[in-house]
Image 1 (cartoon, rainbow, N blue to C red):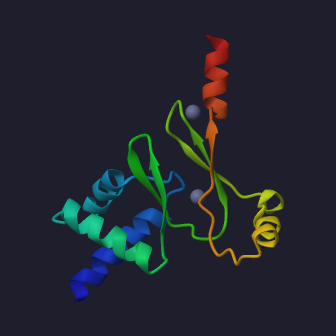
Image 2: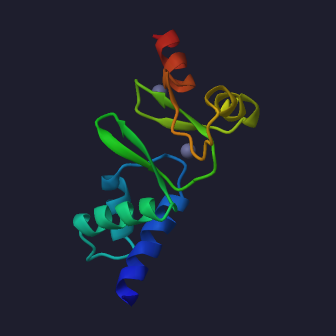
Image 3: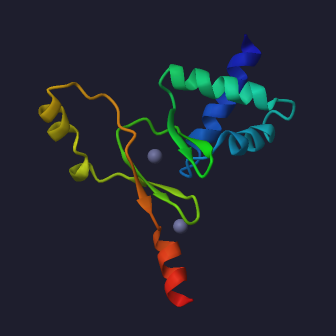
Length: 129
Ligand SMILES: [Zn+2]
Ligand SMILES: [Zn+2]
């Protein structure tokens, strides 16, 4: 059991240490630096458990892979279709949660909305070409 919680802590730590919204393969390669003998299956199982317990969220599949976020506070995302980068949108003003819950007369306790397009880096590099 101690081993299990050690793996889980390591994976959560890896995800907490990044803002890149990585996929399981990236989490696996980073976690192996801390626990060299961990398997990809163990990483997947722990990612599922961390999702169940609400410590991380899955943003869904982008660029062909599922992307994860350890920031579980309500915030929106922007996905660059060109370089597969996912950026946080933390401006609370544009979160339409209150409006939508009024509209539907529903209780909203999570957001997975993702905007898509080209990020600033990609816009600038296509301008200079
Ligand atoms: Zn995020
Ligand atoms: Zn981009």
